Length: 109
Image (cartoon, rainbow, N blue to C red; front, side, top):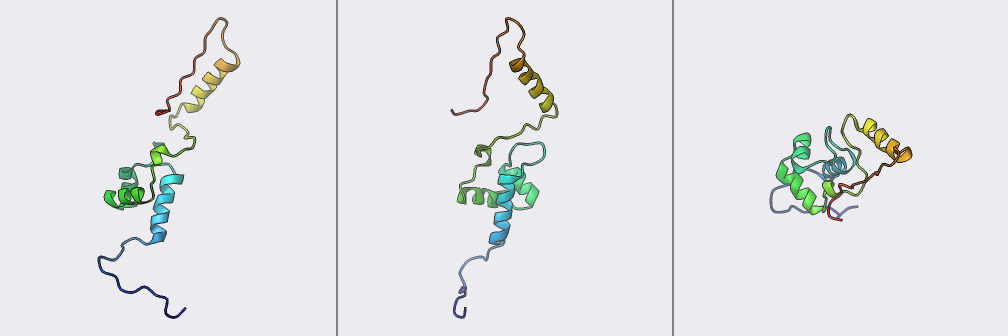
């Protein structure tokens, strides 16, 4: 439409457009980094080539805390499947006179 356009603004122009911001934040929430369960500001900045301060500012602006993201995270332990099978085996077929205890590592409950 004619007449609808941005006027010149004071200050430094944006380096990253909204699409790039969305792409980086989507990576932070959807695709965990190799050998980790979530992205930190430092690892995401290094991965994307964007400064740590910019990534940190975006995390604050959108109130993102990937380390507190509420979803199940698969362990990156290469022996994870074997360990799960051992534990489930204890629950399904416990030894005679055995006590099986379960501890949750989740903090701040």
